[in-house]
Length: 336
Image (cartoon, rainbow, N blue to C red; front, side, top):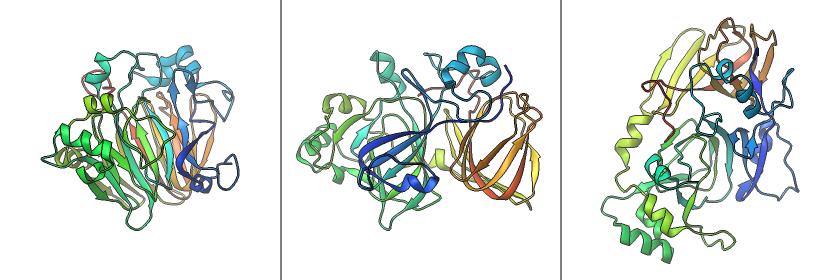
């Protein structure tokens, strides 16, 4: 099967803490002007939920179908998940209100608990209101007993490290991190394809369950500033026509912010898949094995299949995108 850059139909998810900012990206939001839409799943391949191709001759087919039909051409030497799915999930997120204080399982917990999925994520902030923070990590000295007591009595926010955020910042959250996105954050979330969330506290909301026992079993009290700083250490390579800034690097994925100027073009050969999240500008990718040229604009999310050895990008309007790739760790990707 011959592939080309794939764009998918967004899956819009109502959330009690959501807003309407995702409409800025050209998404047609359901409901009235007051209906809270928290997430737009742009690329997903979970059991029962797989992204549908929106462009080109493969339109209407699911990502999971394509992996089953010719995973070697689509993924190269990247191994799919245990369920045969794509090992990444990408979404836009609009936090009009605080998200719940929660934790996602790490790989060890997931391995010991059938049906539970681990999740490591990174948030790239597109916009943040003044005073916006992300709560991540438990303050030194807080004990499990204290954390649980404070979750039950509504004082748990005092136990967490509050990190002020601004546009352009990328925050790493490995599995086991007790965290919450604060109100006023609009961003892109890149994550391993886990959907298990255990809530400790939901800011007084009463229509969703808490999971104190499971959450307390998952919280890693050792995760702190050193873990975040290592993954978020930036590197920067600047040229006349293009700039590459690595903003997050972990075992599961790397994220680079790429800038290219108008009318610049270059080859983009990939031997493994990559995901582009277009933040500004526009361009066109040509030279795919399928012979399909694909235009991109602000807000688009493209899956660049493996095997695009002759592919080239031409920038029509100064463009910025996030380039998400899979690092090689031994021979496999780690899905923690």
